[in-house]
Image (tube, rainbow, N blue to C red; front, side, top):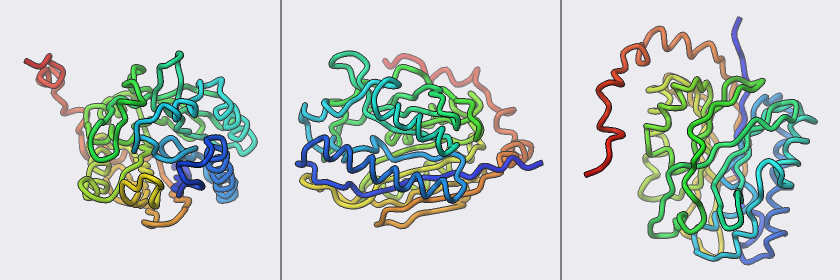
Length: 291
């Protein structure tokens, strides 16, 4: 009996200029996502993921402490609570990337995972934090994640999360596979240029190496006043063979929907025995201290 799951990804442009009042920016993006979430429910989506820090622009294009005001506690903050109510009302698993405040002055780039009945299951904190020119000043805003690579048992299968820059590091993607992930979501904010060619290379490679489904999300458009480049969309799902099964456009708000048969994971693993043939005893150099 096939284990069919309908997944959804939301990619959007920001609703306000980055100079607008913070509460207006936040509410505008929440409202836009709620509209698209309702659309996903009408299309029968079982599990839906939003883009990286979905309720604002990619503010890491500058270094300004005002953006700390947009961080919220998880799960007790208003956005997580709203999404728990929404998940229950729509009978949908939600993966919700939020700017998290843990302690006063301690912030993480985080995604909350909420089950279809509104139960908050836990969170993933982004591990790998870039800090590079132009416009990716993330160490100013985020402490590196410290919760490992959790996999969440949901009504839509075993869900893992990897966030944006994480995708350049295969080690965490492997950990998610070893921890039992069936679908890994990677909410991102990435612009055209140096790494664009990797967008459709790295994550299908993770899907192949670890034999799970991947949902990759990127926002769209130019974000003022910084305009560090074009967020080029092209959100997609790929299967455990690395094949694209659904893909969004480059330049518009869009809900991407794909049907995934989770039994395909076992079929692929019975063909390509990567987990059987691993040699972890020989991989010590990966975690050895640097000289």
